[in-house]
Image (cartoon, rainbow, N blue to C red; front, side, top):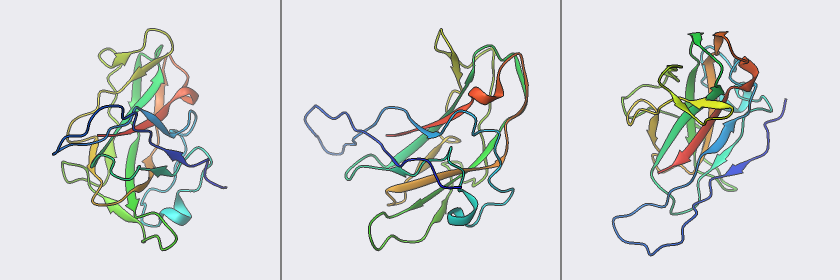
Length: 176
């Protein structure tokens, strides 16, 4: 299968830049609804051949954008329990005609395999359809390491949802 469309993180920058500084983005979908229960591979080491589902999006950071990417998962707000939280891997590379090869990125805790930990009673509720995992400043944050193109894949799928629809779960990314 082919990846979904490429998404570019918008900066929404309207102010005056100061140094040191960063240009941020709003939350943008990295994995579409229905994709968190799709396994890319239990051991991801070749994103070009292993992360190919159309629910996955190539994420491009604008030039001079921030230096950290942060992830959160949205899921059905009627969910009361989740048996297995998904585990993801994040890869980065430099975009362009001479794009560099993919590099596995470690989160700020130093891990490659990262669980998107859910806590239905305490996760953020949008008051209508979704709850969102509360991103940890270290577990769910990755230094871009000079990369400006990213791809996220699953090594463990979301499973065992009680009281909600698993097909509503999705993953979002932002630059900070």
